[in-house]
Length: 154
Image 1 (cartoon, rainbow, N blue to C red):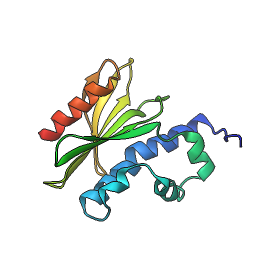
Image 2: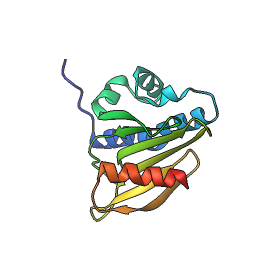
Image 3: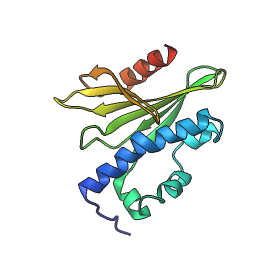
C-alpha cells in the first residue's frame, strides 16, 4: 500500500501538535494520576487519541516519531526519550525527553527544537508554558539528555 502524501503545512501542524501539545497533555495526566506513565510510550492508543483531530492516514504520513527509548537512571528515575523526524520548520523538535521520578511523582518534559541561524533551542514544555532555557550549536542527543537530567535536578 502506498503511503499518502500530505502537504508540508499539514505535516508541520501534526508534528508540532504532537510535540508541543499532545505529549505535554499526557505528561500532565500522568502527573495528576489520571494515566499511568506507560501512556507516555508511543502506541496505537496515541493514534486513536490523535484521530480526534487528524485523519489516520495523515498521521501515518506525517511520521510523528522516528523512535523512542526508555533510559533507567536509577531505581526511581527514568527518561522516555523521543526521537522525532528531522525538523523541517522552526520550532519542530528533534528530541523530546520526559523525565520521571517515581519516588517524588515529579515529571517534566524537555525538547530540543530547531531554531534560527542553525541553532538548537533547549526548552521545557508544559500545558501552561513553553520556556527557552538556552541553545546548542548542534543537535547532540547525549548532550541534550545530560542537560535535561541536570535541569530536572534543579
